[in-house]
Length: 182
Image: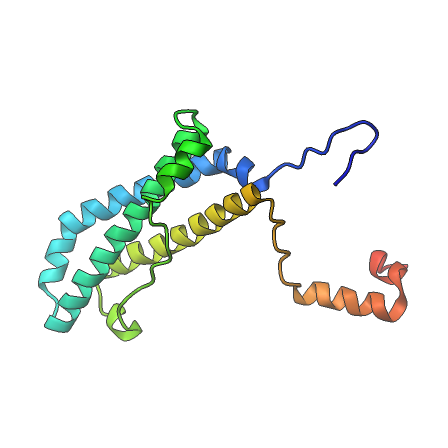
């Protein structure tokens, strides 16, 4: 983009702004809260819940609880690193150098769906919430990385309504799509 009437092009990175916003603080608190909640469950009630499981379910419980812990530690590490940058404790360059230690990657449920459904409800809930948090953090991380590289955000796929507007505009011209009541 060029200059307009003497103003410099100052494209604002949505991802960078989000990472420094109140929304990030809420995400941070949610993530750290989920870490604490999961640890308390796995060290307490989760131990009792796992004792009543059959052998295949107990193996699946152990696998899912380990994956939950690993997933949350990855997410917590990323959140702490990002917060350090946001609060000026670390430069973005220092964070980039440290980021190789944070293995932020997609980690799905390992158990078959029917086995997962036999897990204690609390473990299933924690796993499901951690997956949603993982998706949000992976999206934010990808957006931040793309912004650093100057990659334009990918446009969202057109919705059915947008496709209908496109069809109307093609059939009746731009005025029909802009003002449907005329």
